Image (tube, rainbow, N blue to C red; front, side, top):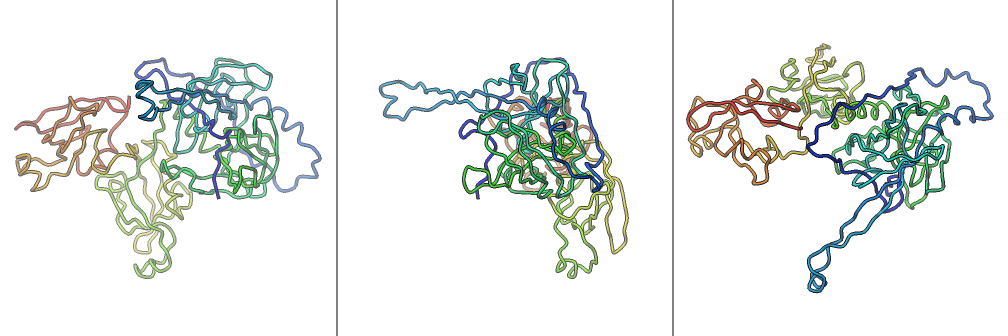
Length: 463
């Protein structure tokens, strides 16, 4: 089986975000229309046409054309004659998008705009605009772009958590560059994880549908029988390049939460709880003497939000904010969708007794960092006897000692090897992961021991 993003082959499109370092006024927030009611009560009569439902949806779906400059490095033999210059070529790509606010915000896929040098957005009324990338999130394959226009037709968002398998759905987009196309099917499954985003440690909770979707449908709308947006079409499963009736869409609840964060900050702020869990299988439950179903805590980061709230090793997490937790993916998705600073209610079992407590999430930082990396290019280690001898650290000094600062680290002028980070933003440093969780966008400061004394070091992070 091969997973195919809905785009024309080799025409992947997207956008390297511009204006690095430039300060702009806060972006205007989108005005979203939402309708969380279920699509039906199971008592609907025979429907012979959905034309009245689909017509307004078509006005909100756009085609996104991208251009990407590809550099080809000449082989050594040819460089003897043509010099060291690389050759360049232009690639064009096609995807779809959905207008979600009258002032021009458009939801699409990350892979539609990734790496693009320019975007052209074509509306259903043949108007064309230049698209600007507001933000992208490879971990969910969601991107937000904006066009400078007002009073645009905007789609209504549904509550994708209330979808049911069997609900009628429609896919709207521009497949294979034939023009805007509507196909229909049903919700085939919910909560699918198909490993499409494994290479970026992504978050998958796909809606599966048999509505025909093909290359070019990427970023288009998946709507319900009321014409409300329930998902952003993202990928298909196929043994060929053709439609096999197995397509996947990012649920709009997930896409919308990512969009709000991208518009507000240009990045996605995800919650962090600081635990590792394992599925409590019947065998493990019997061995541990537990009569429960859920996820058992097998790792608890020191100083983490979970530890501070009172959770312990071997506690069995049953639900978070009322949502059942029956897998690592389910727990990871719930926490990742919750903004840092939010209190979540955790229902758990301890010694066969049910209990509930609140955990205040912090920010998940540098998920892709190496285990010993505190900041990009700054490696640290817990101070132990060996570190004390190597760096001559007094016995009374505790924290994380800087073991290496890379040549290209943006923090090379602030930190040096042998320096001990005692506190970050007034919080004592105990381990790398827990300390990274207390980094915040913008200004931060450390209390460090350096060359026989203590001092404060201010630095910026994530700006």
